[in-house]
Length: 427
Image (cartoon, rainbow, N blue to C red):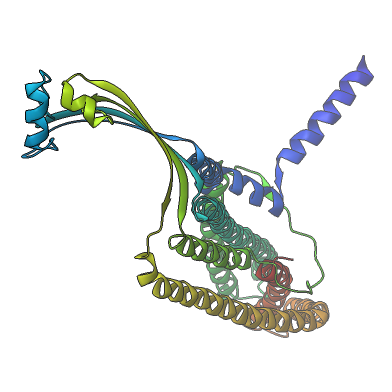
């Protein structure tokens, strides 16, 4: 039983420890899940489905119901000579009435629409792909914002840690000076110099801690929950990425070009002929049999069946201009892509240069910190022996603190630059 309790306690501690830490990938994923833009993907999918469904329904038979009542000034009639002969034989033909009525049901079935429905489907898919790519770009930019906050917090963590080490060093030396003062070896001004510097460092620490809380608060808003006391883990050092550019913006440019190509097909389809079948049935007066309509005013059923060809030549008037406009738009997208690649190449070159510079500087940082520490320790020894005053010691402490701070900052800056380069080319 005791073993089970200990095992359960160990598992709980591991889980609690894991929950108390966050990685860069954790923050990125939580921000993606929480960001309102994520809902765009489902809306885009539904819109694409509706547009494709509408395009497919162009092949469904179209049914139209109409009704009309007319009065006309003149109607077809038999010659008076003929009606006179028939009248003498006892046959009266009143002729068509001037008021006429029709209730019609018409059915049209497209056989070929000149490629319009196919072009509509192509545009629906291309627009959805463009919208998805645009959302991908927004979500990728979100990752960049998360990286900025994450590494900003890590930088402030290092500043706070180094500042606290400097505080401890100043307190230690202040205690030593106060002991020397009690023995009459040091003056009050010596202690005052160290105490003033300790207060100044405390002010800097307060500013760093305030900035860190602000950054952590903003990161918490992005990921959808407060960070609390969770620690942000430092990402692993990665090799500088090599290879081509795989940014989502390139897919967006391709999607824009695909949409323009689909629109070209739609413009061309507008000048193509249309072929279809039609059937019309109507109930009214007069019917298709005019002779019967001349004999009486009874309503009758009538049906028309046929094939219809239509060709709108007016579409040719603007087709060339519309196609030229689309081709110009395509060239504009290609220029935008070239500008993007040019700027990305500049950023990549700059980042690679910064990585080389930081690695060279880091190679000497450990030696610089060790030397500054040795000089400070020697100064502390001289102070105890009354060889130098506290002002000289304070300079040595400041030099060591600056060297340690610079080294820590460079480590984080190198990590930040490496991950910025990965983000620049999406590798």
